[in-house]
Length: 78
Image (cartoon, rainbow, N blue to C red; front, side, top):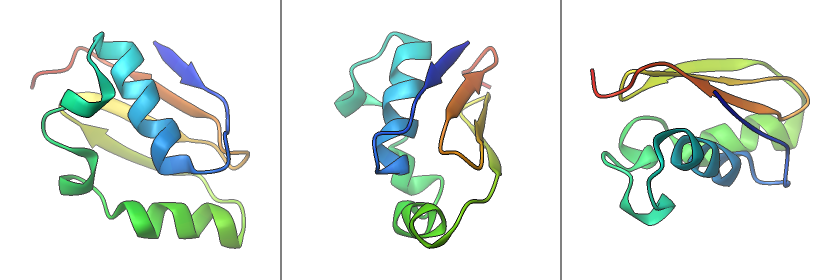
């Protein structure tokens, strides 16, 4: 399980947490995060006020807590 603290841009935190969990270079994630979720909308949610968001990325459960902490868990590759 990878946990990433908030850096101020939650979409970047998600990419870094997924890369940590999968042992992949963040620039080589497949599919790119923007093909799975609207990264601009994701960032806007956390800029405008706290919320908890959960979605699946390549078999991994991604949870972004209301404080911006990102947790990635799961087997992947599904």
